[in-house]
Amino acid sequence: GHPELCSRPCLYFAMGSCENGESCEYCHMPHSKRPVHLDKRHREMLRSMPPLEWAALMLPILQKKVEAVDDSLVTRAMLGDIAAHCGIPVGSVSSCMPQRSQRMLILTLRSMSLKAVLAAVQHGFSQHGHQVEEAVDALLLHLRRLAGQAVEPL
Image (cartoon, rainbow, N blue to C red; front, side):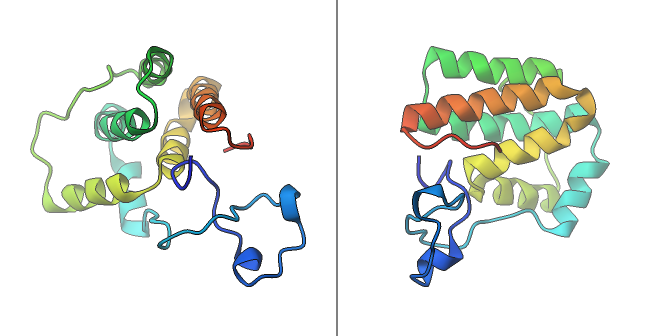
């Protein structure tokens, strides 16, 4: 669950003035640090990668993050669906040693929340139609139900 799958923290709740209560779309639980996001340089680097190289970079990171939350057969099968729609087997690793800039990108991706990595995968493969988007949504929904969290779109 928290903070891997939650939405961004509610700024109004932190100030003690959120009037939305249970219907608020943001997280009311404490967050120890500011969420990590991809910067412009990292987004450009991901955009310039060929799809298979992009998937070989992202999917192993996604796999580790998801398995840290739930390592059940159902969850593994859902990861397999995402990988199949992306056109690469889960666990595949790029054959070349990443350069410094790519290593920095990998470190940033590893420090991002699971929800943020799922959103990046969904966005990165949006050109593949709705299959990846639906598979990512299904995985997020499954993980949230396991964590007992309210279900909201990605």
